[in-house]
Length: 347
Figure: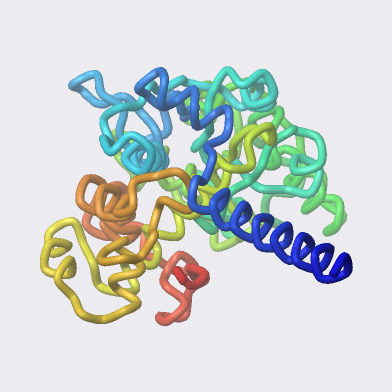
């Protein structure tokens, strides 16, 4: 009789522990950064202060750009409103401190995910939003067409960036020499090149394209057919809140997956009544838990796509072929189109 009583007590205890785990999963406690965002009613997002196409202030005094829209998507996911963002302009040198001090909730500022930054910045890097590579611009009339043609020249480069190190590595590997003109911020680096103080200008190719497009006569400058590095650009957040990092991660994946499904800001209402199980799961419809697993609204994806659009919409309106930047998708195409953009399953 005693044995039966003991066994019954053990079974009850096991059952209660299982129920407790399920209940904890259903409750989905939010992390400290997420809670601060909810209490504040806005997301603080670090962005570039002036990189056309990615992060800059337009004539109306509003931030816009590819990276800016990633911030807006996360705000829509958490707060249900893509406009609830406080943008914090950050230069390259202040990025690490801004993340470590939690001056910003997250950063979406053409920042390359690297081994050393992952180890030392105290940040969680999100999915790559833009696959880039370092490039160089020269004057079209210079006759320079290859990296070897730049041997012994002066090159404008921004300090505190991966571009400075990549440039040194690329020239050293080829036995070439150059004279670096180093500047703390991006705009003065480009301006020095335009003024003729350097023979070439280097940064990520997206940045080179943005600065070239902003010139009075873009044809004066040529982007060399040279790629010096891999530059996976990602949003990042402080390591103190893994739950918030997951929200950033799955918001970016939602943008990519929506494009794969063909769901846009214009047609999303048509998909809300879809009977396809995977679409229902993705959009948090029916009895699917959706965003509640991360402490969000069940249909958080609907808010994100309706207000900001899918990945293709963000790319095309900011930097795509029909903009002054004229960038093609390239590696940033969906995996189904030969690119690298790929979302894990929403199940």
